[in-house]
Image (cartoon, rainbow, N blue to C red; front, side, top):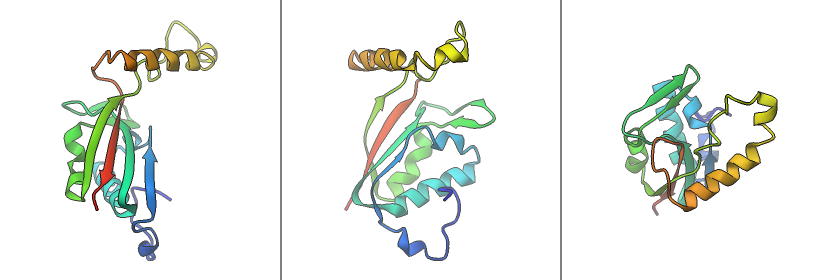
Length: 144
């Protein structure tokens, strides 16, 4: 099912259905603004009271569109969640190296070294460096 589409006629079957909604590396591929807003509204409907919502995005001061199929958004664009009773608990960096392709290596080399890049990201996140324009995790909870 497309999270950015209108729910089918039996939408009540989705209401307050999920304890956790995890949309890592997904929502920034919804480039149409109306579809983006509909996706946020749908997630708010589907999330149970007390449930958690995990979203990865840019969350900078402004939006960035590095490709036609990607649109990173600012934290301000997610305020609709607050209007729907979902509170932001925390925003933490998750990717620094993992979101980059190392151009000095071929794709065949980049894929196998991904676990190493993940380890580097883990170390950087523990050291709380950098706090810049990288992919972050938004942790939300629906208030009861």
